[in-house]
Length: 157
Picture (cartoon, rainbow, N blue to C red):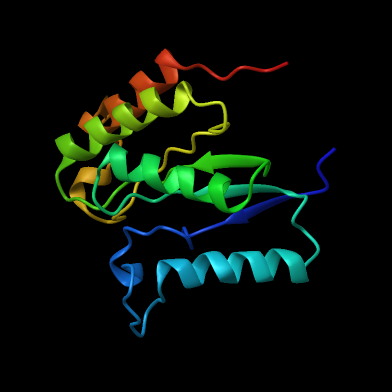
């Protein structure tokens, strides 16, 4: 059994984060490989390497391909690790693009054996396109969430 579930967010190992571009050392982040080293050291020091990790794969580019790459990085660095992948959305002010990304990510995640959990919430809070409904009517992004829920209803054992 798994001891605990440890939520790791925001994604500390997202090589596509503007703050973590490979080879870049800047004030608000550090190199992607350094993040992998940090995660290994942290998990060893806290004696939680055997715990399940829930990792937010936030997509800065609204690119499912980028998300797939990031989702492959951890299993390569930690073979056999028990993971849930989570998603909080992507960086865009375009409601249609964000809506399509959520649907595309859900379609991809549903077919993955190591993507056990899809957490769909929205980014850019307080911007107009993140509103799920107005006067009882679903917005475009609200419709995207609804379609994901209908297409992939929760499964319980």
